[in-house]
Length: 274
Image 1 (cartoon, rainbow, N blue to C red):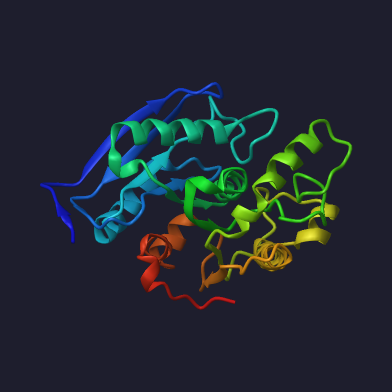
Image 2: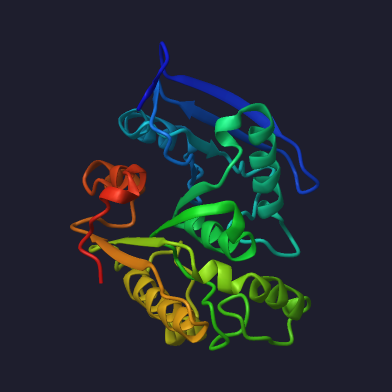
């Protein structure tokens, strides 16, 4: 049953953490469905305002509270992955703790969505803190931390000689079984095959994950399934191709129904998955 209020509200928050301040806005729709809140992470375009506008109709339609952080360039020149130079994961944890303290509706697990650079942060956050999440949505990540030792960190969970590599691998491996139990939806546009300047490229990465975002999404899904089975976990991961969509989150939402797919009730989930 929907909890009926007078109007949709959008509130602004700035939450401090040892890693840095993180602003966010929260869409609280007029009718709440009881579905988990959804955190929406932008990519390197940092278009949090645009995503707020694009997700608002789907928040209202689904009855979900939607949280949109903004990793500003001045404060967060690097935000796509936790590392020695930046700890966006700590900032997200502080944001979730702050919101839980002021609103009981935000006190439980959240679903997490990210596009491109936001998808990179989303799956790495999930690897470190799977207990915080109900469901993970990843759209068009440029590359992944694969959940096995086939590639050295940060491309996988193998160890190399880089400073701090072993520490980060241990952190990711510690929660790996719980991470592999998460329901995960991966999305990529059928036209997202360009090797543009925003796509990380190296011979090692191309060999290990593929040359395009499509190939890398396929690799991630396959390796996730294999890692889950190796841990005795039944994998719950799907790959959805968005017809005609390139590497453009606005196009993915307006023409590929990406926001509708992400916000819909999981009980009604259906996708042309592999």
